[in-house]
Amino acid sequence: MQVKLNVVVGAVAALLSGVAMSQELVVKIGHVGPSSGAIAHLGKDNELGARLAIEELNAKGVTIGGKKAKFELLAEDDAADPKQGTAAASKLVDSKVNGVVGHLNSGTSIPASKIYSDAGIPQISPSATAVEFTSRGLKTTFRVVANDGQLGGTLGRYAATTLKAKKVAVIDDRTAYGQGVAKEFEKGAKANGATVVAHEFTTDKSIDFNTILTTIKAKKPDVVFFGGMDAVAGPMLRQMKQLGITAKFMGGDGICTGKLPELSAGTMADGQVICAEAGGVEGEAKKSMDDFRAKFKAKFNTDVQIYAPYVYDAVHVLVDAMVRAKSAEPAKYLPEVSKTNYKGVTGTIAFDAKGDIKNGSLTLYTYKAGAREQIAVVR
Image (cartoon, rainbow, N blue to C red; front, top):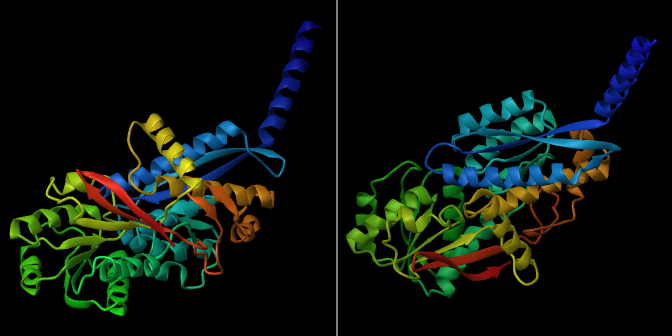
């Protein structure tokens, strides 16, 4: 009799366990960024932002459509390479992710976005700024930062009107991001009365710039603008110092990192570098960002580089849409992403018809005594 009772109890327990398991919804969030290569420090920064969001969502016990959700992060390395980026995108699609946060670079985000679009999977980039990323009519493509038109254009206007630059020289690294932000800088500078005296080209892996910098030095520019990333900007600043070029050095979010002083080996003069980050908060929202940075440092024992807070918010935007749609199925919750009105640590997030963030902000920075210092938040 006792044996039969034990069998019955065991069967009931198994049944209840099965019911509980059936009520748990596994939601896979993909993240892609360069965790290897020259800008791996930026890719890891982004990934940690995603991990923090996933950990907190699981601790909170989010319910989607009546089922408790268990979130899993599938992180892929694209090494900032377009071919590796599309391979990573295909791998995530094959893994049946419910949504994607990434990629970091425009050059990888743009080709990958077609793969996600074909699969109907929502993609939110926390840092891809090329105008082309959202201009092709893909319904699955979104970003939570301002684009190059706003970023480069604002820097060009700042160079001509605030810095009173009459002559500017431009260098870009031939990537989608570098070319895009440099083009918009030129337009902004010219529109406000500055003359572009040189436009030189390098690559995102170069370390020797003496030839192009010597050419630029002869033009005596007031400002040198670089469209590229901090791993290249650092050595470029060192060589500018060696050649005696004292012009202001400007760039977009790619150079606007906490690591730039280290990469430039301390050769930056105070106030010499002026850059802009595609995003920024002020007023009451600043406390949320400061709290996030403190929480991030306590958790990972490292400072935020640039876009970890935007990754964190992007994960929450996807989950917020799932909750409102009562489904984690991409086809069912995608329409809710377009209707987003989410208050995150980076500010209020809502998207326009293209998938660009509405009223995107920019933060202008300079560097003094080896530390980044905010100049202003502009829109």
